[in-house]
Image 1 (cartoon, rainbow, N blue to C red):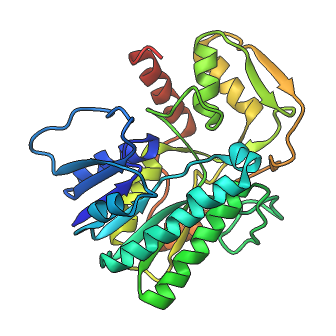
Image 2 (tube, rainbow, N blue to C red):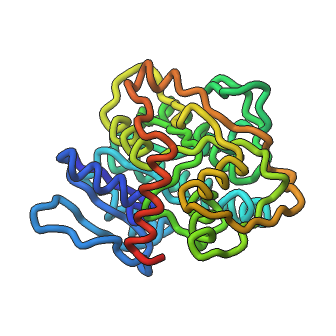
Length: 309
């Protein structure tokens, strides 16, 4: 089976590329031209690396040819930048995905696996943990776009028979996550702590997030390629939450010293608590997380040390 990974050179995509190759799949990576490859590949590895623009139909046609499963990981925004420019978010993510779905149907792709956002599509939770049946009231344009893409995937399945799986990921973290970025508290905080730099926190640090180690997230993505169960939508998280203050405490315990921190006024789009109910994934996808938060944190720390970040 050939799997196309749109965004296969990024944080999640690179781990997924390695996992699919290890599982015996043929992998085609599609990513932007200016992206540095995260590693060299051996001659024995069944991989193609294509460079192009998701908005370019010709580039996309080459990538889709003979691809059976398409992983859609590309996003041009994150929650804050999407709110700063909702129109750009709509055009570059939702409209681009609609063009992708049209071409996927023409190329006879069997399945699209879409990485959605369990952290943003639900909005302020009525209760936690949050099940897939919880109302969806996003507070960010980013979450609205993810939800819109989910709905279009269902529409294309009904109208054209294009199969899909949607994984609403919690807050993934781990090796290769970008540290100079405003999304990904674990990597950003850890990088600042290692360099004894000030960590800025929006609010009082009491907000709770579901931090999911990247290895566990990728196992769910690999399973989604061949899943034949009834469900098509899954929450994928750690099933437990940590506040930002608890995260800072873990960093201090691991580093053996205090970390510098500064609290800033809270942001309106930051929900107070987000922990996902992952019972559907355990029941129907036969998946559950295996990596304790502290273990994932130490692996991320060691990777940063080894790469001198």
